[in-house]
Length: 197
Image (tube, rainbow, N blue to C red; front, side, top):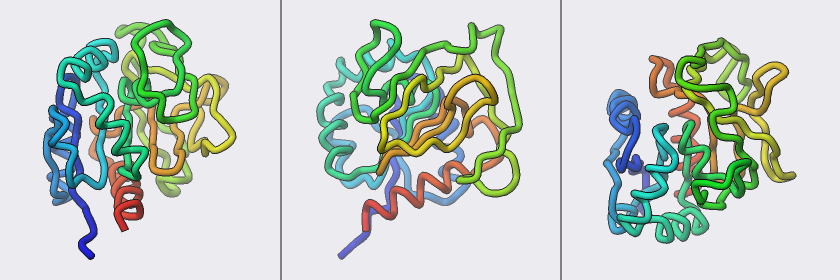
């Protein structure tokens, strides 16, 4: 049996090119995904940061919302960064956009302020190894509530959950793709390979 190792990056809006660049540096077989048929044969899909309402609207324009949900529920791994985390959520603190409802988390959009309030911090994250991870937050969301099956991977001291995992799902409120540190991409690749096998 062939194990699927191809990783897709949802490329309707946002910083998908940065994720693609990291995957290529890691010599991963990867592709941009916009249409439903491009989900076929993937072991995992990254939903990048960007503008969540625009991503949600374009997912509906391209008719990829329901096929993506079916693939993830069928075992395909998915990782949402920033706006991608918003899209994975079961519920948002706000009334829009409509999330995918895949991960048992409640997410608050722009939880740390506007673009001018963007910031960076070195945060210990055991799942990424001993060295703290340099986290870049841009109009970042946070997880306000995580269900019982959600593993919390990191919190911003005194201010919310910023990384979590649930089965084949990974969510980060920060942008690993904007750093030279590939540990989160490698973590997701391991998750995707486990699911594919």
